[in-house]
Length: 253
Image (cartoon, rainbow, N blue to C red; front, side):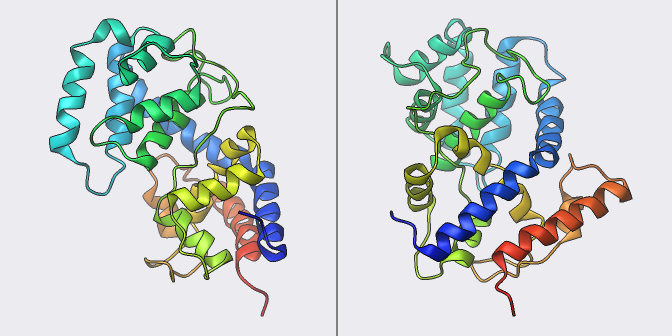
């Protein structure tokens, strides 16, 4: 998909904003990762916790489909001990490539896992191994610490992200595939990982539901996130940053 002038301008401004303000969501995500990893010592239990956490980000997890998957994970513990063997476990074969794109497509093969949750799990595994979120080789020693420029990275698109793209161009019926196709065509694999921060800023700056939700600073949503910093100085700082974010999306009157 080729960017028109307006969309190109808004997406460029958004990516610049996200790059300039990575610190804020990085703190939130680090706190989140620590919360669901800290109680566990074994590799198997940590991996199971990540899988369980990501699966339950769905509004209606498909429990009857997910249960056999989790049973399969626990009955094949030897295949969980490395990044490489886990990908083979997901694909039921040896693979030519072992990277984050392989993880995404491997997860997508599992019943109960969709595009968003597969992308979210992949992103989480990358964050836990790239050394930038307070974790180093949290699960596997052989997981890549960088994203290969040739591999595809997928943004975990949900209603928050769709509403942002609808705000940018309401003539297109946006979904996971259209948004990722657009971004992957115009941005590098490393930049695709930066786009993941869009959810945080979108979530705390939306009110209501559906595609026509209002774009305003929403402190209630900020407080609804368990892992955000709760002191007044930080909240005021994020509010000011949010006004910058909103100025990109809200047309000037």
